[in-house]
Image (cartoon, rainbow, N blue to C red; front, side):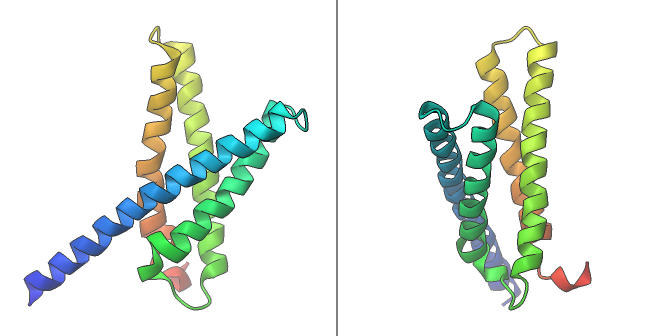
Length: 143
């Protein structure tokens, strides 16, 4: 019985990881699309367009994770706490990505594209663990 419970938990967490990846890809595409449209139409310059893209993508990301990726962890009355925590994670991820990329570009002789891919690649792992263990955790009432 305990083995079956462990296997069920592993399947649930593996599914959450896969769903997290799908939502993350959709949010990234949303971010890029919104920013590109705002920039290319001349509505905003690059930096404000990037911020708008990030904000729209945050809505996609939070909704997808709250209602799908981590739906097994949802608790009544916890949406605001989860959203606030996830915003901290998203902003931290955005900052981490920017710092890693800036350091890469400044300190390494390697191609910029590799630095960009590297900076993008490390954020999802940190974001997944933070979202799973903090933003959408069972213990929202404790903090």
